[in-house]
Length: 123
Image 1 (tube, rainbow, N blue to C red):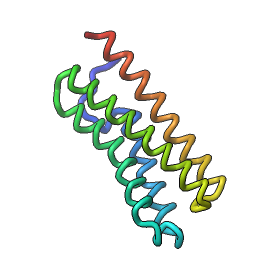
Image 2: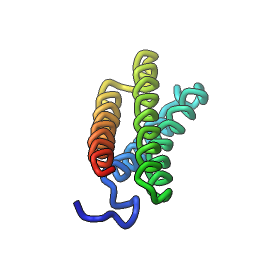
Image 3: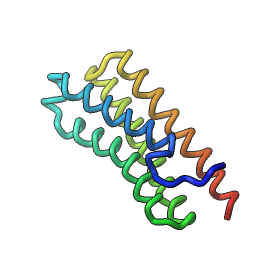
């Protein structure tokens, strides 16, 4: 694997950035979410936490610290998934929105797992 020079090169970060934009689009254009600002804001924060922890971990410049932050990002993906189910159960989002967001966050989680395994193997 070629050496990464910035967190922007990391595919899981790129995908998380897309997820951030999509959750903002979904929640901005939804009257129900505008009334339940607690869940809306928590979902936004969990999504942002994924990309932010990938970036912060990369900038720590040690593999052990990076791995730790990738685990935190993966945990935030789990938090987001849980909140996504609640939004769906409450009828805040359509089935299409649920499946699209769920597919994206699951892909990010899998990418993070693979990246963590790779980095652990380099220690």
